[in-house]
Image 1 (cartoon, helix red, strand yellow):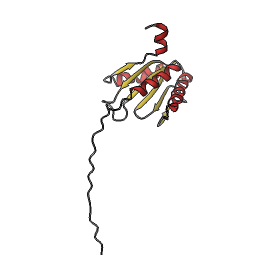
Image 2 (cartoon, rainbow, N blue to C red):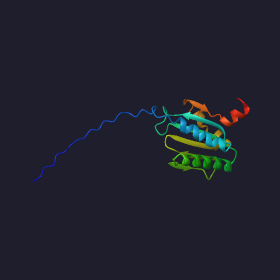
Image 3 (cartoon, helix red, strand yellow):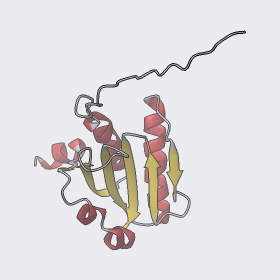
Length: 143
């Protein structure tokens, strides 16, 4: 007769230090891809201290459904060249509010009316924000 005893294994894990891995370079690259397609009002929100789902939002506006779709396609192309594919993509074909989920960075591209309606910047108003300034535009205008 064989006796099997119950063993309890306790594994302790250190809390994840979410500040040790910056998502800002990825968010800035995505903002640059959006600027390539002339998306406007590009904002980066650091939601790492407010959300357990993601660390950073990149929010931008497109002029039409076609423009929103083109901006998202440029982000996907650029990120694919960097070896990353979205975990999920929603609303790209519809074009009012498109979402590309890259895990630590979530991209929202809205038409203006949808952006005003959902107002993510107000919803996440406690998040530190960075307005993306396209380096090509800054170089041309000198600002």
